[in-house]
Length: 158
Image (tube, rainbow, N blue to C red; front, side, top):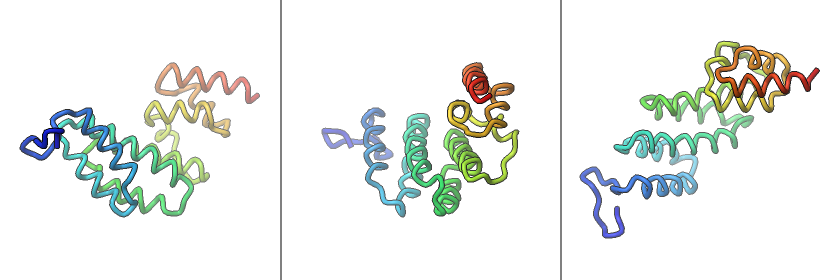
């Protein structure tokens, strides 16, 4: 709704910046039980990139909170179904699952890391305690930035 009480035909506030702010606020206040429903609703927004950004901001916050928690797999499964049609959110959720596996020393494959998004490669280049991860990123990271960060860390790890 707008300040004047009007909305477009689908019930969305016409100004995407206002909607984005409202989505952020809604995610800040949503209970874990209602998060999937809110995510599904937001992903129906006609401005898909804005909606995906709001959803990914939530995914980042919640995944970081749950990263080593036993509830992460159930949360991941539930949200994976909800975001399945939004490629950006799917990739973000996939990357968080990879980070969890690496953090808990669970199985993962090099190909997963090499196809991970830039944010995750840079995060791991800067923070991974595992020499093999840093070495792989120094040699084959997606971007020059992640390769340089990893190479610099690799020299310090020797």
